[in-house]
Length: 481
Ligand code: SF4
Image 1 (cartoon, rainbow, N blue to C red):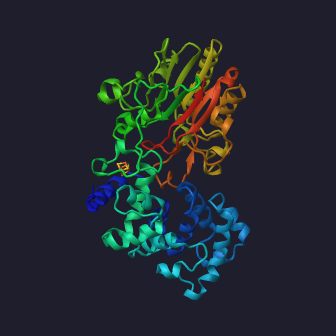
Image 2: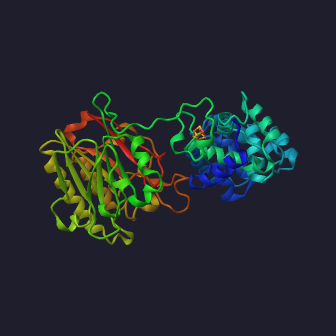
């Protein structure tokens, strides 16, 4: 079966417009500076895009050109670019770069042959710099391009170099520059190296899938419990109808969680399409706000609850659709959308009243049995929980009274389950839609799973699923027995 390469590439070019672009293209768009593209490309080898973006941003605050790079010692460069893969070697290469460029008159060379003579620059990097920085025909073959071209049977090769040489012979030149960014974005999001998403692939019908084991969607009946562990998900979807168009139902099946708590659904149940109102294998419970298109929470659950508590019996909060509690045999699952204090902190008093009331509410539940409370708490607790703590000390979500409330809640013994397992910085759950914040990982951790103090032994793991797109928040998870 031979493929129509024109159809494949034009279809995927349209498809990946919805995805985040690879970081090197992003830097090229932002700077158009071959020096920065070269440096970012060196950093990007064997490193995740988010890590490269953060390291490049730290480095470019100090380094704007060859002179400023030359003025830094190797240890400082290493510190700035940590934790990119092989950061010590990359620091060495970058330190040597200004001297190595002397013979090119301190300009970045424009050919692959010249670029590969520079320290730390292999053929892949050189092709990428030629294509991205100089917009000249070059085929950068990274692992995604090599892998996917072989899956399509467009080449039959053993190494990226062999793939590059084959593509130079047969791929129409008009695709050379963009093929890398298209297939990197596509390979990261859909045609993944392990269990690719053929189920949602736009070229599935025509793809020969050579050597591929496609991902199987779990059937709704499949049990999620492994050794008695329940997986719970919490996600501020920022509009349930909007996220439905971004593959929400597929994501639900793929997550295969016991219960999924959503916040900011911005819809009444009767406004929802069937695909959302009835997701196979789940029962849904809704607590929308009275005001249309505002706030609201809902919980999808595989297991029928014993009881459902809508709100907290406080009209002021309940009319905003902020709290929904499902009671099961041995625990309560509380889905909460905490208010935003709003610019100028104009709703701070209301938010603090809500915080006090929900704390009392979960204390009352915890006196009966285990409480799991999850949702968008709309507060970053500690400096580690946001990218720019100093600048945000007086802003909603990080103002002192909001942090003090979170201190009180945690001091009372409620466990921030994510921090029980992970003390790393730069772990966020929300990013502004502005300034490419998600691509640069300028974010906040404001979504939580907390568990009452007496139930710590039931917590098995907690995570942030920041690879799942569709909202300005990503989902967070809890494994719980
Ligand atoms: S059908 Fe599957 S293997 Fe083929 S390109 Fe799509 S995701 Fe990759």
